[in-house]
Picture (cartoon, rainbow, N blue to C red):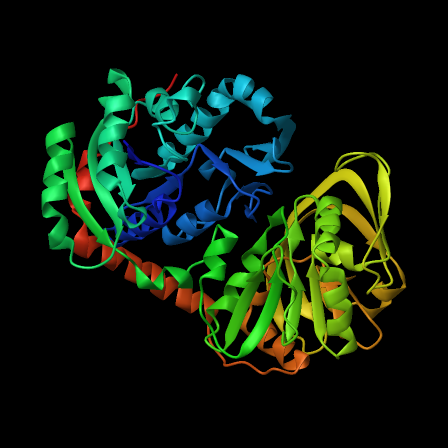
Length: 487
């Protein structure tokens, strides 16, 4: 019978995803069949699964740590923000609806049967399910109909470990305050706590652990020091990419409001000789960039307007005049064309807008969404690569005659006549070591040879060892309880 335990946070960004990834790999090292599960995630950085759906990128990394292929059951509800007040709702990998926050809040309880269904399928196939919460259970204003934290813990009847982030300060108040504000039935589910992101000498917080345990009655599992190699793992938040330090080769990436599927940046950022610089609003595109990479977007037309409002279109034209190279992926590819038409109002109001005009192509938005894993070759060298497509819209035009990829046997992408401006719909292509080296050499900046996948695997093993050295991992696993049999 499978056992399960849920890792919740005393706030957002306390490091739950990283902890679950490390615990998954620690379980594998103990010979357990383990699977990650997150009832509800909110992210535009999605992964495509073998069963043809979408899940959060963090759950894909956790699946890798578990030595499993990603599956839609690992993240049955994914919210992909399209505006400040609304999001596309993905249920068991497929588009369910687009809802405003208030509507979703009133309807999310309808999704709990699907969430529990996915959870039980995973539990039927594995020894241990490591569940990740979202945000914080202390958001008691969201408790009614909750499927992300205590609402799911209640539905699944599973124990909870609460994690606090000491790096942001006030960790005692985070944890004790959560205990105080929760209703008794939710409070009783929390069996233990842990402190994450500690810098310095952990023994200096011994009295803090005692204070938390005395106020709450929870078991202390320990203190996790800051994991310095976290930057080597795929990032779910684009700002985690921005913190990475690299070398003299500069890849400039404008920060789009609805940036999506930016895992294309991870292998580049992992290169010791490359700096991926995220350009925030209000800053110009740097004149010394070797490559400007325009990433994917959840709302291409709105992000194109934002791009122009920052003056980045002027900077980009100057970059091209200086002989610079440009790559647009997915939404970025669409922006580089002559025109984007949305006759049915897929992204908002029906409209047609002028593109950046650096590629002679145009895109028409359509309701049908393409979600697929794909095999490809880089035409210039024959290097093989794998990636995924996840987009709305169809692109046509003369520059597609200058395709530079062969995708599942068909031409893919477009390029300017001089080859300095390229676009394609394939995400994840830079994870292929041969392609990454060949592409950057064509940009005129050869990079060091390295294995990106091997680096991720080594870092996952190091993360597991890091947790095992500072946390009572065996006790945490012992706290897991049997998954009740469903109807």
